[in-house]
Image (cartoon, rainbow, N blue to C red):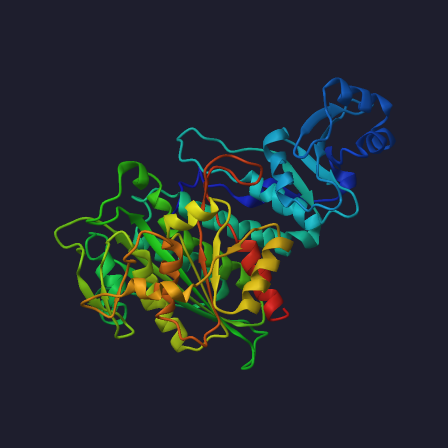
Length: 475
């Protein structure tokens, strides 16, 4: 199964070529409003400045302008923030603004070359299944060492996550998601297992209960990997992702408008898969486990019903207060199993609650963590990477809102408030108090086109999570 037909599928390698500035057909000059005139006058001449001014160019952030040099060679200007502001996304404007050709980007000395590559790569991404589509664009010249660097691996991981999230649900069911995860990790010789059928029912009863209403059977993808650089004292990182390939809401049916984007409900799985691929590609000196709960939440005569009671892997009985709160059920079994291995860090990502979006909007994934130091480290990583996270509390005062009269716990709160928090508290019941655990509630979607963030599926917080893990374990 492929996420796209081969003639539609984009390949990041088509958008760059190894070379240097002297081999460039064209140049982009990244300039700041405070100094662009002097800079362009020295590099292209006063006529170029006059041309740019006549076109109304003022170097505001993200503004682009095509202009010829004294020899008639086409070049471009790109407005970037002042020196105190880092913005890798601004370079995402270039793939759409530049014509075909090979381009070199000149930046001020304080701009990270990594940001140029990352922004350009994220901006070059497109998703289409149109029959006559031909995806072409400018090529970025890069140094030889850069093609195996972090920015390039980061772009590939983002493209993986975006492709999976954007794939229509009819082409990406639970088994197909697991198969795509196999393909993504195959180059790294990870030990892979796909659990389904009776084995799934025994090992992951909540996952099985969520998925039993669909003709496309649920499964759990498990991968284990160790770097050649790792030893017995190296950290074990455990990643868990919600892979609900389509969420109808079940018997607590969503409205048609709310269902329109539910192919993205596996965005958490796509994000942690991309993170795992990135960590392996960078050969971080650690041990890694990845678990994806791959399932579809459908309506049928066999689907789970409101007020069903199911015994979880943890032995805890769970009452189904709402069939549209299925994601936390999928995660619960996986988190409990992952915690049994006593990892140094347990991290889950899920498109879990609308409440998080109401509180923080689409651009701020919610961060939940019991440990203040770890929470601060993840937040600081999000700031340094310009990849925001925002912490919400696991407020124990709301814990009793999950009480059930007939089971150990209900999957939904008895009140209509604090939905993201109570979802986090539910997950926390399946994670030992002493376990270092981070839960991310992500939207995994861009509602509109912006530089480096095209409309559609995305993996917000991917860069922040990678940075935080590297910082936490001094990698």
